[in-house]
Length: 275
Length: 195
Image (cartoon, rainbow over all chains, first blue to last red; front, side, top):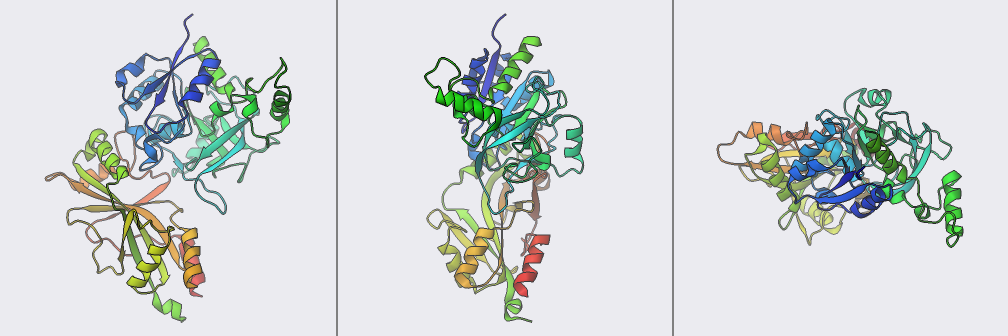
């Protein structure tokens, strides 16, 4: 069986393509950085897509707004329609939402609005807990419901919201929110800083109804190594990190062993193998 | 009636980059290339608009205060035009249509308000949005063009305002002053500053 090719769609200003490629390669996929200057038609040949984080087009007009108009997004929309997996991370999530690929159907139904934080404004970076919810999402459906994944966030516009009354509630009911911000004890975040941006219903990630397109604000590719995890993270993942760092020269668990973020890429590999 | 209440008024500060604005250039290119209804857009200018609401000094005094703080603008890179009354024309070309876009419930600038209070001893309300000045090709349907350019609906329609997080107001003909509608939070603050 040949290795599945995954395109990492790079717009100018994107800055997470290298770590996204490394995460994909680690789980046995074949990543290829696909720059915006290439013909859009060449993007059709891939089996899955990652739209990575960064600041596409310098966040001009609004984060993700200009990239969402690029002809490459027409290819991604077509691929999504045919069931190919598409993962948008942070700025990539903003692009997918602005393009109407999430929650799907092509009409823009959401915004990733400016962070709403008490007593502060602007860009905010920290580690958070994302709780996995029951969902058809191909990237997370193999994970047990309720499991906590410590992941970093770093953004100024990450607040999932909709002006349409009841839309967010409907997405929750449909299982299209596979990730929600939580506290260390597993309960929903409810407020800052556990919910780092004021997102409606503590939503950290949304997918389309079919589950093959996921937009997430946390950065799983930055949490692919145990040793990269923040010291503030405790629980099982924190213990593994401490063991990894203490035993850096031991043959056992080391700082470059799989961290919590790799689960999304494992989920993608599993889905591609099964489909 | 307090003295502050008697003098209360709203002025606008229009802040524009002194050199070519890459954001406006990009928005123009994307509109022309990818939004069918906005192909007639000839050029876009992006102007940050502040509205100051409270007991204010004269226009020269306001301009001097704004010039001193990067809460408002950087005089090395931007220029500022103070518009003191609705009778004064805004800094727009005769053939430009203006659209104000702001973050829903996020137009207030608390840090700028604190700076103003620190400098003057008076509390005011500061709101900020982006005014897009749109010029169309000769013969283009401006109304259809604005419709296709402003409100984001899908990949082929709208760019400047995502209605799920932002509000907009078109300044057809005369640009109103005030341009922002009073929000509930703004009205509450105004009551506090006037009492």
